[in-house]
Image 1 (cartoon, rainbow, N blue to C red):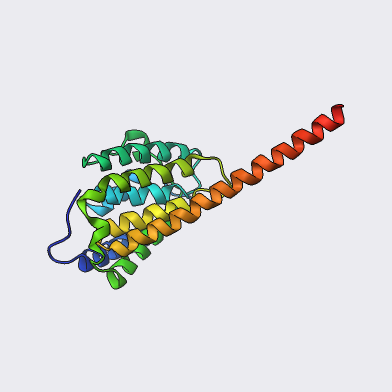
Image 2 (image 1 turned 30 degrees about the vertical axis):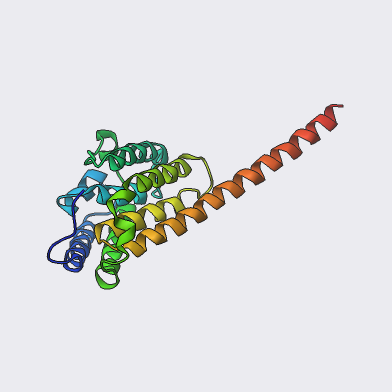
Length: 218
């Protein structure tokens, strides 16, 4: 995993924001219905990508309307979590690299990334270093795996909060802002509460339907 930029993360983040804005302008100039971006293409726009960059892209793709993306990226997130925990660089699986969005959602993805880096360059800074300590690596790997499990579950809108949690984690690692990692914990905890509440309601409803069926058959 790459370390902090010696020239300061602010300039790097704003430079990336401009790059995504220009890529969006170029895509807008294409005819309607032109092919959108693949994950590999978005990664190329980042240049040399770290594991934290891939974490952000995986998380954002989880809320994009691509059939089966939650399952594919959920598995990729588990693999990334294992490599994160062992301090290894993460290679992009071919099946994930070929995931493609249409033109409309490609523009939205570029806008989300550009906005995230623009916000990061203006408001984020290295702080709360305790969240970034090397001994926390295993804990964050477990957190990624836990959020990936929630993303994998077939819950209505269940991808959103875990994905936002992982975006905050990736952005915080990229820009060395420990407060973003704290935000990742908060948002991810809300996602876990949502999943637990939905599961409780679904189980209670199943019991009601079961009892009603047994009463009808009696």
